[in-house]
Length: 180
Image 1 (cartoon, rainbow, N blue to C red):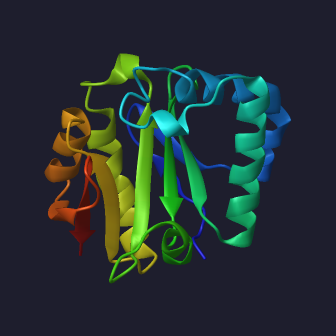
Image 2: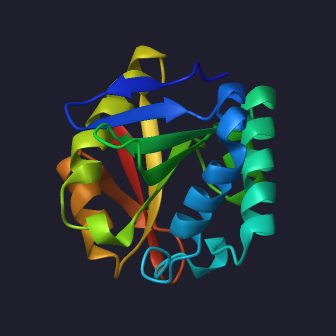
């Protein structure tokens, strides 16, 4: 099971979603809704779009439950200056990936969502290496990502962080691997 993640960067903080976040639940619902309902943010992941606060609340509840039963971990990326939520990182363990994908080997998977206003501002380029290092420190030596071929910003971030193309995943997406 993954240990909670807590990363401080000069301008950003990444923390695993935890029970302590419940104290600010309603504002977290609205922040998650803002990111996961935005058509620009979800341009390449339309099936991940949520429509309203109720769906955002259910998503948060599932994220928290998943963390506590070992089915994944959600991390929130916040700006240090104002504590604004600017991104979400999902870490999916091999046994959960096995339920959704047919692969020869099942590594940990990572998905990330970033406020569209911050695209091109190197947020994920700053954070992803720190996430990978933290996972490596926990003994996770292979991390994968599935990315839409047309999602050039995400592809640049992955390549910059030593993710290498492995194979076509489906007609629109490819599988990339970062291996220590």
